[in-house]
Image 1 (cartoon, rainbow, N blue to C red):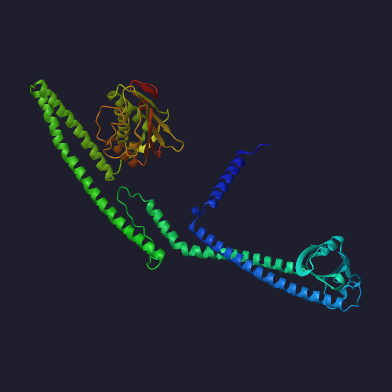
Image 2: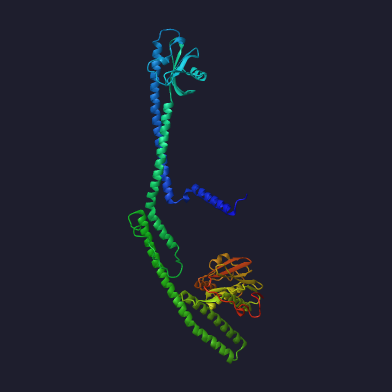
Length: 526
C-alpha cells in the first residue's frame, strides 16, 4: 500500500525540520544568545558536578576501603591468634578459624596445607558454615603468602583476602566481603547523578527565566532596529519617529548605553533625512518651475521656425539648419514634458482613477508604436473578456508606449516584440512585453529605472534617449499601486507590468476590442 501524498509531504517536512535542527545543533554559532548562555551555564555546572562527584566518590572509596583493610587486619590477627593458641600439632590438623571469637557474618577463613585447602568456609548470616567451591579453593591456593591484601571475585561475591603463614608450614587465609562497600559506592553514585540532574534542570529553568528577563532590553532594542530597517528611507518624506524606550535607553548599564547611543543615531539620521527631503523638494520645485518656464520659449522657437519655413525662401543649407532647429526644439519639448510629468508624480498629485478596460489600451499602444518602427515584428495577445483595472487611461497608455518604444529603440530591425495581457485569479492584470533582442547588460539592470540612466551601448540602436522613459513608467505604475520588473538574458528580455484588480467590472464592447483593420483579439503586426 502506497502512502498518501499528504502523509509523504508531512514526512518530508518533518525530515527537513529534523535535519535543520541537527545542523543548528552542530553549529553553536547559529544559536540564539539566550540559548548559548544557558548552554554554557549548564555545561559549567555539569563540569562542577562531575568534579564534585569524582572527589566525593574517591574520598568515600578511600574511607570505606580503609575501614575494610582495618577490619581485615583485625580479623586476620584474631584468626592467627586462635591458631597459635590451639593445641600443637601439624598444620593440617589445626582447628577451623571460623570458630574464633569475634568472627562476623560473611567472613571467610581457610587453611591451606601442601597446596590444598584442608579447611575453609564462610560464616553465613544464620551462623552456619558455608563450604567453598573447588574454583574458590583454587583461587585461595594461589594467593601470595606475604600478607598483602588482594581483591578476588569468588562464587559467593567479591572479597578482600589476606594470606599469612602459620607455624608448621600452613597458610591462614582470611577474607571480608566487599558487597557492602560496592553497594554504598553505588548508592553514592546514584545520589550524585540524581542530585546533579535535578540541579541542572532547576538551574536550566531558573537560568532561562533570569537570562530572558535580563535580555528583554536587548530584544526591545532589536525590535526597534528591525522596524527602522523596514522603513523606506531611500526616497520621499520619512517620519522617523520610532525610538528605543527610555527604560532601555538609560545610560549606566551596557544595554542602556547601547540604547542611548542608538537613539542618538536615530536622531542624527532623522535630521539628515529631513535635510535631504528639503533639498529634494527644492530641486523638484526648481525642475518643475524651470520646465514650466521653458515651455514658452520652446513654443516660440517652434512657431518662428515653422513661420520661416512657410514664408521665407531659404537655401538648401538654410532649410537643413532650420530643420535641425525644429527637431532639437521638439526633442527639448519632449524632455520638458517628461520632467513636468515626473515633477507632478513626485509631488504626489492624485491620479484620476476610473474603471477601464486595459485591452484596448494595449492594442492601441502596439498599433501606435509599430508605425514608428516598421522594421520590427509586433505581436499582441489579449483575452476575449474585459481586463478591468482602476487607473488613468492617458497615463497607462504612456506606460505602454514607453515600454514598447524602449524595445524598439534598443533592438535591431527584425526583432520580434510580443505583448501579452492576462488577468490572474485574483483579478490583477499583467502585461508582459518580450523581445528577442540581444538583452540588457546585467550591470545595468539594477539601475534601469533610475532617472537619466542610459544603456545605448549595451543594446543596438541609433536613436538617442533622455533616460527618463522608464523612470516615468515606474513612477506612474507606483501611483497606480502596481509593480514593474525586468528579466533579461540574450534572446529574451521581458518587462512585466502588474496592476491591481478593479473594484467593478466593465461590460465588454465589441468596438473597443479590436484594432482598426483587425477582427481578432489575438493579432500579429509586422
